[in-house]
Length: 229
Image 1 (tube, rainbow, N blue to C red):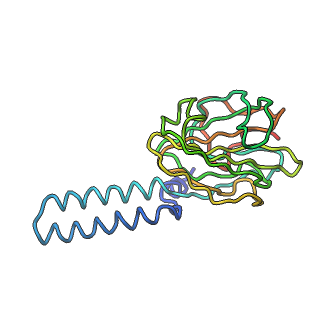
Image 2 (cartoon, rainbow, N blue to C red; image 1 turned 90 degrees about the horizontal axis):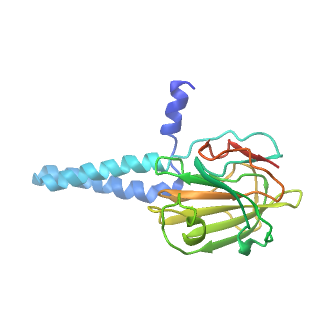
Image 3 (cartoon, one colour; image 1 turned 120 degrees about the horizontal axis):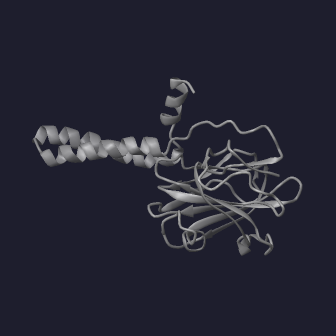
C-alpha cells in the first residue's frame, strides 16, 4: 500500500455524526485560547489544549473511509472493522422471527481505534429492526450480546433466506446510530449506522452457511469476506 493510500485511511472524511462533537470542541478550543491569552489564565489555555486534543480524536474516531466491496452476490462481507472475538452456533434473537435453529454467530469487537461505521453484509431488504436498552459491559465479553444496549436488524436476501446484524454498545459507547428503516432495500457494503465510542457487531449467518473466518482475525468492514452464501 502506498503512503498516500495509507494516509487516506487515517485522514478520511468524518461521518456526519461527528459534526456536533467537532463544532463543540472546536468552539471551546478557540474561545479558551483567545480568553486564556487575553486574561493570561493557564487553566483556560489547558482547557484549550484538551479541547484541541478531543477535536483531533473525533476526527480520527469518526473517519469514514471508502471501501471496495467484492462484486459478488454469493458472499457475506464484514459489517464492521475490528477483530473477531467469538464464532459459535447459537439461536438467533427471538424478536427477528428467524426460528430457534442455531446458526453461526460471528462477533466482531471494535476498539476506539477502529473505524466505527457499520456496513451491510449483503444485498437484500431490511425486514425487522428491534432496539433494546441495556447495560454497557465490556463489548468483548460474550454476555454483552444479551445484556448490553443493542440494535438488531434482520436482512432478507433475494433468495428469501435471512441473516441478522446486531449493533452492540460497549463499555464506553453510549449511542447506537441506525440510518435505515424496515423495508429499506440495501446493497452489500452500504453504510447503515455507527456506534460511539467502542462497541461490538454480531453477524448471524443463514442456516447451513459456514463462516470462512477465524477468531482473532482482523476485519475490514465492507471488504472482508466472512462467509459464502
